[in-house]
Image 1: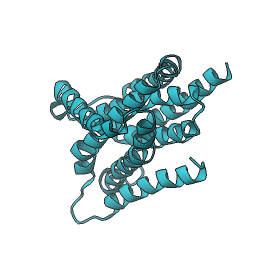
Image 2: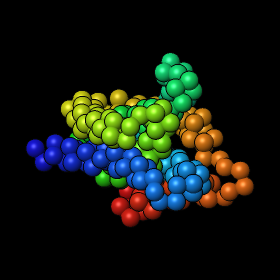
Image 3: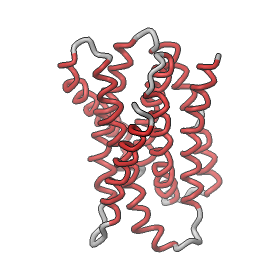
Length: 238
């Protein structure tokens, strides 16, 4: 029972960062012009840096660990990129102009699944992954709010929708706990496929949006985001 409570608590706290990021984005009266430009691009890059760190320091090493044939790591990552490319094209992200929102969901679900599996396996990386999911959900929620706001949706409706997304984490985590705990190979596959997909999203949607002419803070956000992941790994001894 304690493991179930751990999964629900970790995934819920990580998911709450989505509406929290949206709430912070809804505060319009604090330096609006600055918030809309350099700070928003900085936050986009920060989320991208955290995603990159989670991919290279957690998902890929741990996913490769669960493979019986490590040489398959690269092909699986490539397949993950192709899957996310296909999903993005199917969902028409460019037409809907909300890559941050859908990108957040595409990486949130497999990561929560992996988190449930890691808790079942008593992996020391479970806590680190939960922290990283929350850290990346915060800036992604911030930017997703801004994207949905451009579609003329009310703040209350957007935040209500984001609160509804929180339950995805516990559901995915419990599925991972009950199913992936007995299928270590599948857990590794999911982590590597998610890694490939996240790398695709970073360079397809997040990195281009973070670029701002004649400003240097956004690229530094990516560096800071990656360093946050590295620091978390060192602090937790994972």
